View 1 (cartoon, rainbow, N blue to C red):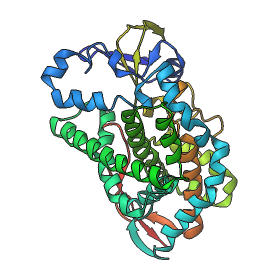
View 2 (view 1 turned 180 degrees about the vertical axis):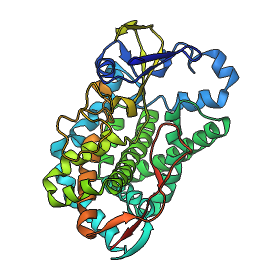
View 3 (view 1 turned 90 degrees about the vertical axis):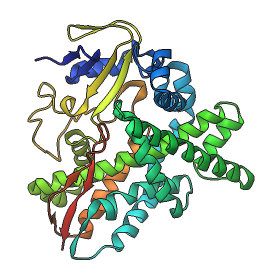
Length: 378
């Protein structure tokens, strides 16, 4: 019916076309600060009607993804050098070691849940290594992340909002103590970047804590879904798995294909800061715009045979990591982890097959990944 659809009840413009979304994410008339949403949360009526929701969104506002312009660049700028592709190469040995450590624990043959055994713990361990966090903290970080990632759902129940608010406060309390400890003892991990930024006045304490929360959530959840969703694609397309085994040089385009065909997120949000015309539609200032990534990544106007899985697909301009100034900061890390993880999995077992019906997570609207992925290896 068209690349953009207005839902009149909510006032949300849903974008399904690749070309239209490409223009939207790059346009200066489009931002990410939800306070600009005309009938959103940032008003006295919402604050009176939903005080818990207001406190949650207000406290989560102090992170780079929720700011535009100079504030966004001030927060993002301190990390950019550490997460660019050239810097990622130095991390490869550590990521390979974590993958090997987890795979060594698993049987040479038999059945297990790949999410629980590998796809879930590996990215969290990699991220915790970057910040020098002990394995004992993994369970807490995983629990807090599971509650807070629902903020991206846009629609949340009152119970989910309270749970997320409680998780945010607990997460911040943990980080406040951690940062104080590292200041006293010295730090050589990536934590030193955010400690210096706060000490130099680049970030306030609240910005420091909430950006760390966001980094730890997004930094591992993105790769959990990449590994799980991507492996399911290979299991459902065994000819593509054989092709990848036979030609490891295809690993880089294969990971891009996994990201395109089974993205780990359903929606990317923008808000019109000014009236903006795209694809014959004028989006009024203050309107929310939601890119439906599954549709955008399979737009037949942009991709040949969009529903086919091709581990050698060239020119794979998917939008799973977003685009424009708010493109995912950790994308190079997620890509590297994905390439290392799939290479390690294929080396570890000559045969990997499904051993039951995988279960998708149904407790989230935006984050899109598997709860279980039962496999048999030999």
